[in-house]
Amino acid sequence: MANRLLGVISALPEELAHLSDQPADTHRIGGLGFWRARIAGREAVFVESGAGKVNAAIATTLLLDRFDCRALMLCGVAGGLDPALGVGDIVVGTGHTQHDYGIEKEDSFLTIQPGSRPSLGEDSTPGYAVPEPLVARLQAALDGLVLEPLPASVGVGPRTPTIRFGAIATGDSFVNSERLRRRLHERFKAHAVEMEGGAVAQAARRWGDDIPFVNVRCLSDLAGAESHLDFRAFLPVAARYASIVAHRLAPVI
Image (cartoon, rainbow, N blue to C red; front, side):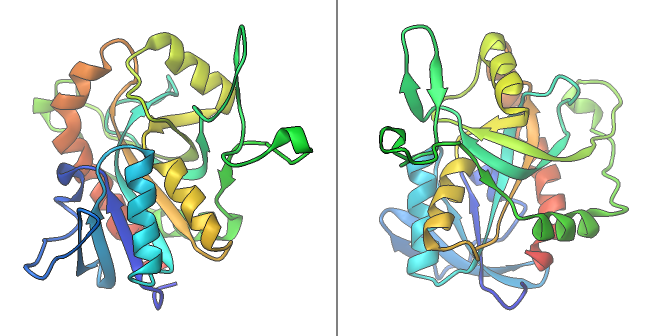
């Protein structure tokens, strides 16, 4: 756990802002900046990957190969899929599925596991599950944590964010559709949707089943018709709440 070098990834600078100060000795590889610092006392390598699955996979591969990181954490914001959740709520991933990888049919889309070949009889069931022992450690680390109420400036009323464990869906598109939000929630039972987690999980699995990966997301919008408006307004606040949870989890990954 803590003796493994931790790789910390965020897609956007706002998401990294509360995780680490960026020192002067930044190593640039492939257009990405990597730097060493600490999170909750644990040594880590940080990188701002940029949005999307390819960017996330590149950053993850470099953390694993060039810096020999053997534990990974992705931290940032996401769109909410579960109608029971609201802006500010935290979702810690217990499984990750790339919802947009699959087979386009005449009247439907079949999601399959990236790289699988169902025509050869390979198991194409989509998703990368987080091992139960790791989930148990994460839950124990968050036991008793109560987040502060959302500031009035957010404009969603007086509510205290909750922390949930559950599935997260990943795709290379910003979800700005109530129809798609409902479909993703019903199909994958996912609490949140974002653009990087499934790719980080896939790259980590390539290195072996012993690379723990934790995805911490704060809901900055509800992935519906108004999500493009909510995202800009709530991004800085949501990133700060995600970082609070990330600091509690970093020592046990």
